[in-house]
Each structure stands twice: as C-alpha cells, then as structure tokens.
Image 1 (cartoon, rainbow, N blue to C red):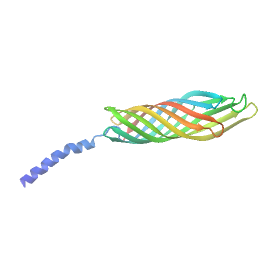
Image 2: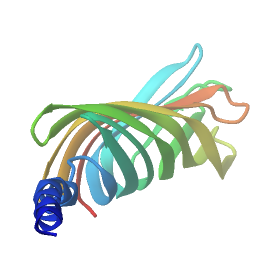
Image 3: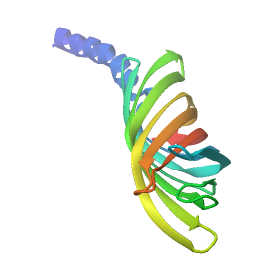
Image 4: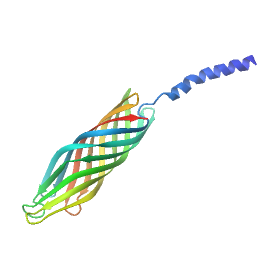
Length: 201
C-alpha cells in the first residue's frame, strides 16, 4: 500500500509541471480582435489615358484566429474598413470628360502565414479576397451622372506583430487590386499601411 501511494505521489508530481505548462498562453495563438487605422492610397487608371492617385485615412476592425505550431503560425481573418479617399482621370471617353471614383467600405477575408523570429515578435504574409464599394461620377461637360458598384479583387500584404499579456500590436503593408470598373476600362488599386491594436482571448 505504501509503495502504491508513493508511486501515485511521484506520478502526480511529474504531471504537475506539464499541466501548468499547458495552462500558459501560447504566443500568436487563438482568437483575437483589433481596431485599425492607417494610410490609404487609391490609384485609378485607364489604358492610353494615364493614371491618378489620392491619399486619405482608412479605419476599421479585424477579427481572426491563429494556430501556433512550434513557432509557425497559420491563421484566418476577416476585416471591415472604410475610407474617404477619392481620385479621378480625364479624357477617358471623349476629350475633356472626367471620371471620379470614391472609395467606400471594404470587406476582406483571407489567411495569414507567419513565423516567430524572436520572443513575442512575428513576421507574416497574408492574402485573400477583397470587396470594395466604389462610387463613380462621370461628367463630360454636358451630362453628369453618378453610380455605385462593388468591385471584387485580391489583397496581398506583409507585416510584423508583437504581443504581450494578450495585447497585440501589428504594422502591415497591403496591396489590393480590384480589376476594371464595369465596362469603362478603368482599373482600381490601393496601397495601404495600417496600424492594428487588439487583444487575444
């Protein structure tokens, strides 16, 4: 009986550190939410016409979930953003006309793949689907019309993230391409630099 009791004590003592280790939070793992603010550069262009660009402020929020496998991080995330940035080009259909595009809300869903390069520091790349609402205005000097549409495209990006006690901070660059606006031949792209601050649960 004494031998059995001693064996049970030894087994409990050996399993306690492992149990405590399981309770420790793993960096860059689990669900998270974050607020976002940053720089938005919208570029529009048409074949044979040239291009224009404008800068503005973008803002929004992100939710996601990461899995950390020995320092390699794989995650899914979704984002809602908005912007007041707008731009336009001239001489698109006839000399002297003008087409302006104003960026609206932007939805994104994609994946992240990263790696811990130091304690609490991760570098990552990202990519996925993006859907932006755009308002267009056309004016040829005689007629002025406006319309809105949703443009679909892709986003690629990269960034660095730090975390401590569940709080997380990210700085990332993102490039988005939305293809042509309807049948106008005008393409819509954007470059962004974003700061995200959030919390992991």
